[in-house]
Image (cartoon, rainbow, N blue to C red; front, side):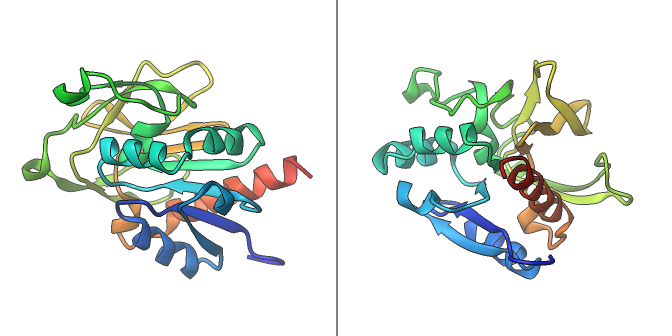
Amino acid sequence: MAGKPLRIGVLALQGAFREHCRLLDSLGAAVREVRLPADLAGLNGLILPGGESTTMARLLSEYALWEPIRDFHTSGRAIWGTCAGAILLAREVQGAPPQFGGRQQSLGLLDTTVQRNAFGRQINSFAAPLTVQGLDLPFPAVFIRAPAFSGAGADVTVLAEWDGQAVMLRQGRILATAFHPELSGDARIHKLFIEMAQEAQAANT
């Protein structure tokens, strides 16, 4: 990247945040692990990683991060959620564990419904060559207890599908992947997110 590197934060409360950090670093981004609201200051983009979405939701409450992340989006900056992170972004979550009364708190920023574990649990995890809009060659997507998206709003673009279900969406400055690009070793989707963060930065200056 030319000029001053973009500052990209990765929510580091739980899940596969280190893998995101490594790929971002390989692309020349200035990476910051985010654990507290103050860590969001000065960032150009934020990644919510894969992990366990109900655990992550509890930790967002514990560290008072729900509203700061919503404010981060409102301020015009880019956000990307992978797997559990994508679940946290959605308007509506289906398939929450019974102990949560079938309901799961989410940020409500992405105009879609997300179905947890849409492709099966851990034993049914798989990798697949995924055709992604904007990429010349298939992406080696890793699905682990992956969700799927449905009922997307009019301003949401489906960038990839697998087995007839949407698995990658973009809505303005929001990117969501049901799979784990950080586990593939392929940095193309991270590069796409950096470009989104650059576009958002340019629009806000």
